[in-house]
Length: 478
Image (cartoon, rainbow, N blue to C red; front, side):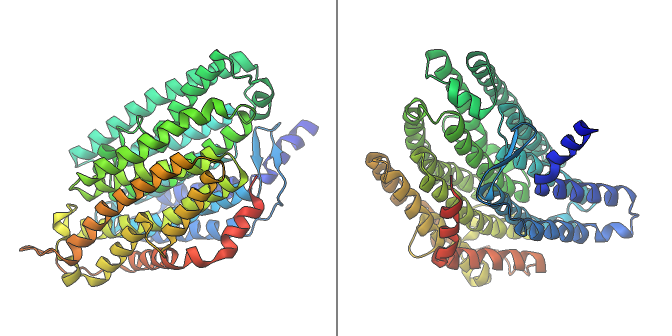
C-alpha cells in the first residue's frame, strides 16, 4: 500500500503533464465517437480544451526551489513551468493558424492533427523536466516520432512524403548517435542521473567523446550546423502549420533541455563543451545566414533563418550562467511570436492561393496591406531592428555571452546580424517596392488567423518594453 501511495504521489507535481494527457484523451475520444455531424465541432472543441489547459498552466505556482519525483528522474521549478507555458502559447497559436487548413484541406484528419501535435508537446514536457538521461531520451522520442507523422500529413503531396522520409531517417541516425553517447556516459560515470554524472564526470577522453556524441544528437534536434541538412527540405515539404510548430516549439524545447543538461550534468568541466559549442555557434550563424540569402521559397528561406536563430540561442547556453538561462528563455519567448507571425502569413496566403515563392509576394502591400505590414514587422523583429522585441532578445543574449568574456564570439554574431538584415529586407522590398503582373489577390483571413496574427503583432511590438517579464525570468533562473 505504501508503495502504491508513493507511486501516485510522484504524479502530484506533474500537473501540466497530467492535464495535457486529459486533453489528449478528450480529443481521442471525441474523434473516435463523434458522428459526421458532431465532427464539425471537433476543431473548436480541441482548441477550447487546450486553451483551458494553457490557462491552467499559468495558475500553477510551486516556488523557486526544485521539486522532484520518481527518485529524481522528474524535476520541476518555476522556470520549468514557465518554459512549458511558453510552449503552450506557441502551440495554441499554431492551432489558430492551422484552423483554415484543417477546415478546408484536412477536415477528415483534423482530430489526428491535434492529437499528434499534443503528443509531441507531451514529449517536450518530459524533455524539459528530465533529471535523468533515460527520461530525457523517452521524452525526445515521444516528441520526434509523432512529428514524423505530422511532416507526412499531406498524403497527396510527394514533397511531404520525401520530407518525412528525410526527417525520420536523419532522426533515427541522430538518435543512435545520441544513445551511443549516453551509453558511454553510463559506462564511464556509472549513473544516468544528471546529479550523479556531475560528480563522476572528470573530462577523461572517453567521457569527452561521450559528450561529443550526445551534443551531435542534440545538434540535429536544434538544427545546428553540421547537423542541419534535413531542415530546409523538411520545412518545405511539411504542411506550413507543421513547419511553424517544428521551427519554434521543437527548437525551443530542445534548446532549453540542452541548456539544463549541460549546466546540471557537465557543470564541473564547462571547458569540455564550451570550446566545441563556440565553433558550432560561429558556423551555424554564418551558414544559416549565407544560405538564406539564396532562397526563393519562403519556407526554405525561414528554414535557414531558423538555423541562424538557433546559433543565436546557443549564445545564452554557452554563457553557462543564470543570466544566460534568462536570456535564452526570453529569446525563445520573443522568437515564438516573431517566427509564428511570419509563418502565419505564409500559411494564410498558401492555403488560399498556393503561392510560397518570394517573387509571389511582389506588390503584396497593394493587394493585402495588413498582411504585408505584419510580415514586415516579423522581418524587422527577426533581424533585431530597434525597437522591436527581437532587438531586446538579441541584446540580452549578446550581453549574457559578453559578460563571460566571449567578445570575439559576440562580435562575429553581430557581423552576422548585419548580414541577416539584408535578406530579411529582401522580403520587405518584394512586398513594398517590387511590382508583379500577377499579384496575390486580396485575401479574406478567417477569424482564427486574425486572432493569431493580432496576438503575435502585440508580442512583437510590446514584449520588449515590458520589463517585469525579463525581471521575473531573472528571479527564477538557476
